[in-house]
Image 1 (cartoon, helix red, strand yellow):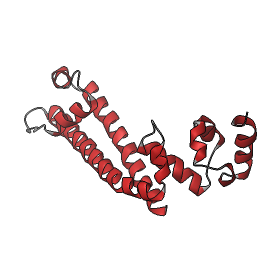
Image 2 (cartoon, rainbow, N blue to C red; image 1 turned 135 degrees about the horizontal axis):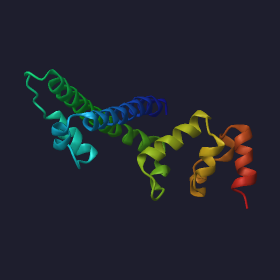
Image 3 (tube, rainbow, N blue to C red; image 1 turned 90 degrees about the vertical axis):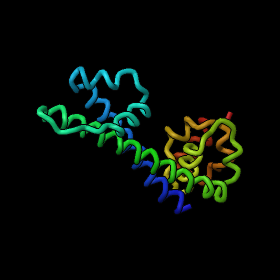
Image 4 (cartoon, rainbow, N blue to C red; image 1 turned 180 degrees about the vertical axis):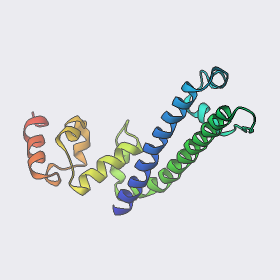
Length: 163
């Protein structure tokens, strides 16, 4: 259980940083000169990061153009690295989830992210009314009300989920 929690911290950080880097990359392209902007128009997020990471800027007479291209390349490479890092962490998490909570994998329509999040939240006792209230009824086959924090568990068990 602790291993899942620790890996989730690293994964959450990588995902958050990747989103920030991708937003910065998009902003750099958006504010770049029309010539640079034209190279990246209409690309998906992954295509943008891939194309940006392959840039080979050469120093020349225009220092602003060169530094803009170097920055775009650095951000593209960062997005790619963080994507690979997240995939590696996912590969480490999947067997731990299968071993720790195999019943969670039987819930239809829920990915590993949701299962990781819900299981760790239940085990750590940090359930919140807003999260649990949005959770489909079928999840509560795996999360008994008694394992939630007392005030929230009672509210969910008595007023929200019980007919």
